[in-house]
Image (cartoon, rainbow, N blue to C red; front, side):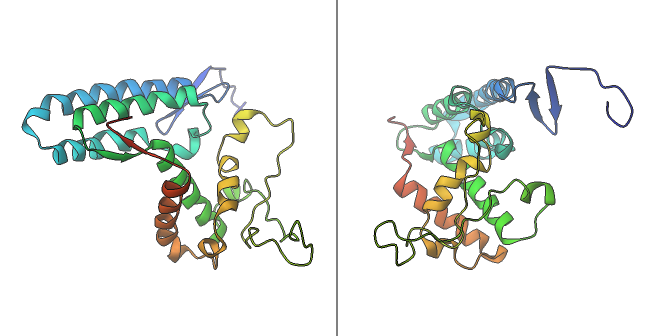
Length: 222
């Protein structure tokens, strides 16, 4: 029932361009996006002979990748098998663009987007429905060896991953829970004095930090 009106049961529901299924696997959504953008890549392929590599790259970044990255915080908890549909589109794009092209992995870009929004929620009074989802802060803990000083790796913005052992995997993979471990691993200076006006600086630092420490680059050779 919705507002006193019976609502017919359905296996899929499309809201604002995202297809939700009954199990929240986002399998159909990601598959359909990948198929549609693979077809759009055909335009890039047909224009490849008249465009320099920079032009082909600009077409991919301007017309294809934004659709692959639409509303990632909603479906980033999908299993890797379904996310692979998007990665295959980017690999085909790299083949079209040509040798020597460097692109961030889509997983890296999703993580940067999610961590930046997490920063925004932690630094402002965001929508109540979203801030209520955030894991609670965890007080500084003693150093595991000395017990007399605080653990230096436990920064002031540390979050407690407060999920029960029975929580299903799709919850553990979803925003924001999938990002808490990375968030907690950041150097304290990256999360000092959380302010919205510093969000863009934080985003740049997160991208640099993850690319250097945890992620590889997608190139035409891998």
